[in-house]
Length: 442
Image 1 (cartoon, helix red, strand yellow):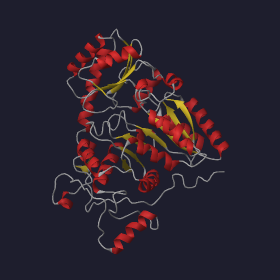
Image 2 (cartoon, rainbow, N blue to C red):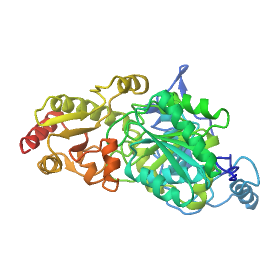
Image 3 (cartoon, rainbow, N blue to C red):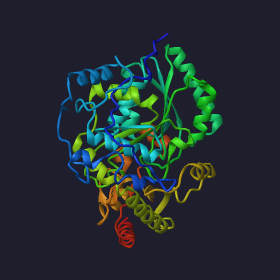
Image 4 (spheres, rainbow, N blue to C red):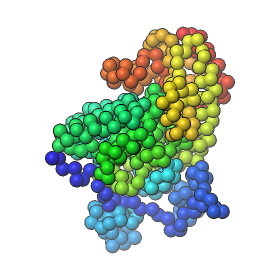
């Protein structure tokens, strides 16, 4: 039997919070909203010469008050003393900009703790490596972002970790069968099921996962020693979906996307209870991978306007999709505002508060027609990200998901005519005119 005793075990690691006075999170007896808290939570101007906004703490190391303090901090880092470090130590572990950012990220999802990383894939990689030992099994939904799916299937396999996957729309009965299959597979390998990993909405199809059904199936299969459920919430978070409210334990973000929102940085994050974050933090401390101070500072800037940007982009997407829905050269839409499947609509109604601004449009024809459409766009940029202030378009089968085997792409509905669109905050009538003239070239 494999030794899984250290997988996701609580670890004492530095979690300093330089807050000399209590944080104010209520006013007149009511909880303040995240959009309000983004303006100052976790930062005291008096610690930085009265600077209204946090300066960039561009340093690799921090001076200790005295020798005894340095010893206490390292006792916390190494686990010799419970409670973690009591202050700032070294920029691979923590820093003022990163700590303020992590405080504010936790607010959006109602999480106890959050961790910032140098990219979304760094966050995912450290999460999976912290969770699993040789012989263990990861259960995951499909489709996933191609790099996430590849990391599970190829990189984790090098360390003796296998997986069991299921389609995004799986029912409770199907999920029960998946959990039992994963348990049997883990037992045959001398391991455990250590992580349930979801992506909802899925990239690039927008397929939704029933997080509540996954939670119920997980609970029924594993009882008190259950693996955590982690979910990539990049497409709808942090505004339109709060997975921790529906049974997830860990929320994953590519902060590059909506949170950063200006296509000028790369970062990622995880958020959840400290029992899950502590062992991940310990591995991040060892490997590195924390985001740099400048990136953290830029994300603090972006968090102040994330609600406004996402609202405007969502409104634009609704108008653009209303135009595309009945266009004769559009075969179909993968947009959460127009769901045809009753199962998917039920999940949306229970889990989501908005349809988002990233969707897929199926151009009549194949790759050649899709390329003609993309190459004819004037306002929308041909690029492979999403969630920025500008509208972006790409062809996943030929770009982001090119490495996915053809059989797997066909199984997941990632076709040669599926164009992924991320709507920005431009004028919606201009965007519709751009889509109209581009479709005319097909």
